[in-house]
Length: 151
Image (cartoon, rainbow, N blue to C red; front, side, top):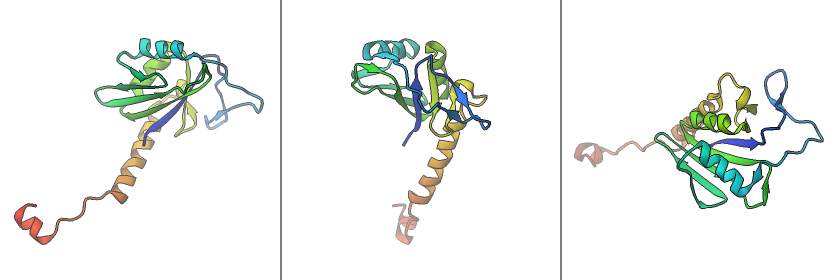
């Protein structure tokens, strides 16, 4: 599971409703961000250390986060996904600053570029993940003998 983001070109209009939720015109089409090598280069320049062993799926592992860049295999990319784990907000904001790309937070459906709290979606995702883990992956209570013998 991950905190998911969608990347659009720098020319993408960032329209919002009164609640700050991203809106798109009915006839709107995403503009090209660039070719695969160009997009890889932009990401690698902004965030050093991205592993492009699979050219369509970049991976960056930081000290407290991981980012996966899902570029796909089309010649020209008009959008792509980022799957973030851990405390990745600062790295994503660094990518925005370096590229000018517009990034939509799937959790909040708001533009990170316009957000006064770009970490909101990541925190919501983490809260949800904590609930899922608590409900479905609770450690089983140790039995009598395990408690006595420490096993």
